[in-house]
Image 1 (cartoon, rainbow, N blue to C red):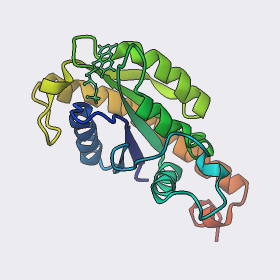
Image 2 (image 1 turned 90 degrees about the horizontal axis):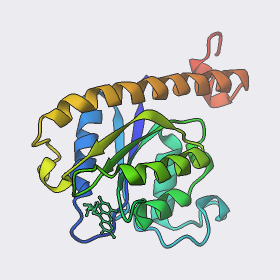
Image 3 (image 1 turned 30 degrees about the horizontal axis):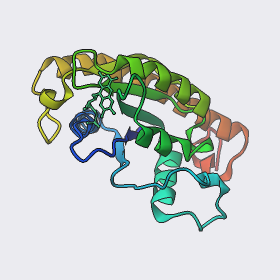
Image 4 (image 1 turned 30 degrees about the vertical axis):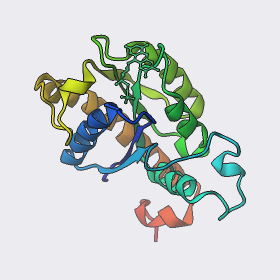
Length: 206
Ligand SMILES: Cc1cc2nc3c(=O)[nH]c(=O)nc-3n(C[C@H](O)[C@H](O)[C@H](O)COP(=O)(O)O)c2cc1C
C-alpha cells in the first residue's frame, strides 16, 4: 500500500535555509511513490501552545491546527527536519509537535538534522529523539545529518552535492521498512478489533 508521509519543518526565521532541505526530502519521497504532505510552520501558523488540538471541542480548533491534525492523523510516518539552535531544536518545531499526541501513535519517525556549519545539527538530534519517543512516534535508528545546508541544495530542493542523493537512499529504505511494518501491524490490529472502515482490507472481511 502507498505510504503517506508528513514532512515536518519548523523554522520561523525570515531567512531560513532549511526549507531547501525540506524540499529535497519531499522530492525524494515523491520519487519513491509516497503521498507527501509538507507541514511547514510558516504555512500553518500555530499559536504558542495554549490548548492542545485534542482539548478543543470538535470543530472549534483553529483552521490551521485542524488541518495539521488531519495530516498527522492520516500519515503513516513522519520525516522531521530540525536545525540545531543552541544544541537543541527550534522552538517553532517543538511548538508545532507539542500540539498533537494520539495522531502520532504506532507510527515511526525519521530525523533529518541540518546546520550552516560542518556538524549537520547532530547535537539537536539527541533532544529530538527523546521528544519523538515521548510523543509516541519513535525514530528509526539512522538519521540524516546535512552540513552547510545553505549551499547544499538549490531553491527547488535539488542536491548540489550529489553525495546527498546517494546517502539518502539507505536512510529512506530504512524508514520505509519501519513505516510498512507498522502500517501492516495497525491494519492487522484494526482487523482484530473489527474496525468497520477497515473490514474491506481484512482477510475474510465483507
Ligand atoms: C538561534 C540560533 C542558534 C543556532 N545554534 C547553532 C548551534 O548550536 N549549532 C550549529 O551548528 N548551528 C547553530 N545555528 C546555525 C543554524 O543551524 C543555521 O542557521 C540553520 O540554517 C538554521 O535553520 P533555518 O535556516 O531552517 O532556520 C544557530 C542558528 C540560530 C538562528
